[in-house]
Length: 423
Image (cartoon, rainbow, N blue to C red; front, side, top):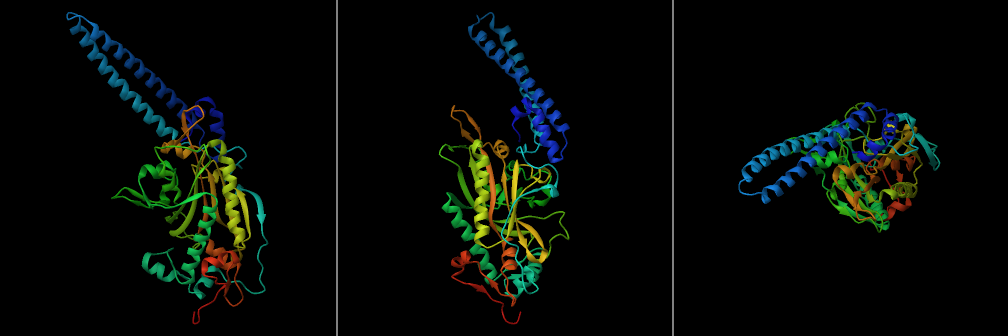
């Protein structure tokens, strides 16, 4: 949730953020009223508690004759304290319910508007051209016997697939290449759980308007994660971290699951938009003052990967209305997909400021010795979808694919992926 002090002291900032996102401003006034009611109820409770303590001291000091009347008064006061405590807790619950409808405050400079209102920050690499009719990634994948959509659908349904042979090796190579890059930059690798509790899923902001895209196991009341960000955000929940020496960085390797609700008929060919995939996710805990600089570092590491793989891409500043509820700013990197004649998202990198850590009670100790919410950031470093751009960008006329030089050591020195005869 957002900072209640910011809400109280500068509600116009919160309203501007709501407007930029295209969200309802009136919830800010509702939250202010709920906050005032909460503080009033808490004040009443604390005042009665102080009176109760004073009454306890009087009872202890009273004479035998005075005690019965004072005890009766103390019992009456205890009932009032209990009732006030219940009102304070109810008011606090009401405030949290209303405040949780306010999404993270967007960072100054984020473009306003929706999905189409992003700003392109830079375009890198030449768009590939061919002196033959290029094949799409699925046709190439089938020729290489690397992708099997037909049997994936037979086993699990639409938008499931098998990666086989060089396809399986290619994904593992990508993940290992990304992991090496992450470890060189101070990330600790983690293989994360893919089932999490509701409080962890909700704490990261994934149970808002896009909750229908999350798989839920009702009998166990557990959620399948769509990114290891969820488990990584929960890793240090209810803890106080030491970030004085610098950011705490994790690289989470996991399988991810997304129902892709509302995307029927959109990018459904091949493995671009599927229900299950693997991903290496960067996740950072840092001092909030360092968050924006760390955000730029995450993007730089992503660009290092993409450039090493010889992909043409653009970096975009995502508009406020297209941000997830927990992101204050998000940079996407989109690679050129030749057969589609457009850029497609390969990475997403979000600065979530203190939004997730407030929900999950993850704090750090300030110079004054007090605790405060830590900032969290996340960003993709490799995922199954990258295979789409690699196959299409580096294809040859005979259906073979030239392996990017940086990836060859992770494929046993293999330089070319060759079609399998008879396909």
